Image 1: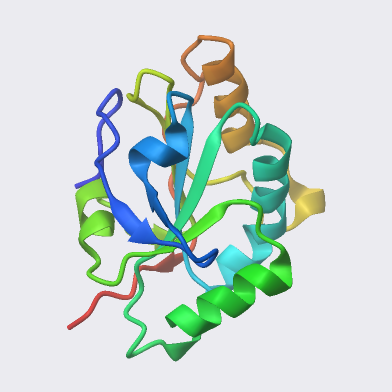
Image 2 (image 1 turned 45 degrees about the horizontal axis):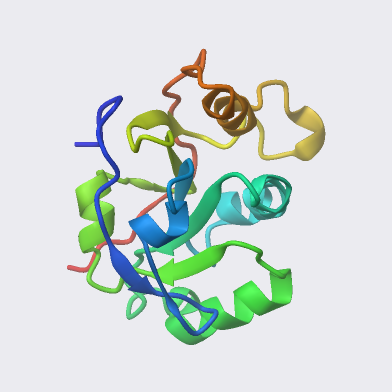
Amino acid sequence: MTLAPRDPAPGFALPTTGGGSVTADSAGAGRPLVVAFWCNHCPYVRAWEDRFNELAREYSDRIGFVAINANDSVSYPADSWDAMVDRAQDKGFVFDYAFDESQSVAREYGAERTPEVFVFGPSGGLAYHGAIDDSTEPEGVRQTYLRDALDAVLAGRSPTITDTPAVGCTIKWRR
């Protein structure tokens, strides 16, 4: 079961590809927070990763961003720690890219897909959950769900659209 509107962000403490660690508190630091469930191998993540990175770059002074890979890296070696480090460096990620090796954070959030985003307002309540936008192709985007949610939260409003289906690969759970 995924989080409900206004639910607080579940806490976490995870290692990041930048060599440190990130918590829900440190990522948000009293600001709105975007938590995205992510991985390296999923073609949907790859379709959206440049747009997500650009949003993180554009909003980073006002909003915290963290992407969390919870995939089983034994069954999916492309999602291993070393591959994450390489991907973050190759793509120039400006957001924290964290590893949920135990998969406990993904379970607490009720995440099912990659990519799947959760936006928490400055008071910590869930404001938006779902897809980044409505197209894997940048030129096909008509609805910018994540951007619209970020703008609403920054303006002190609830987003017009608070939930959309996350489109992507399923999280690869350990058996």
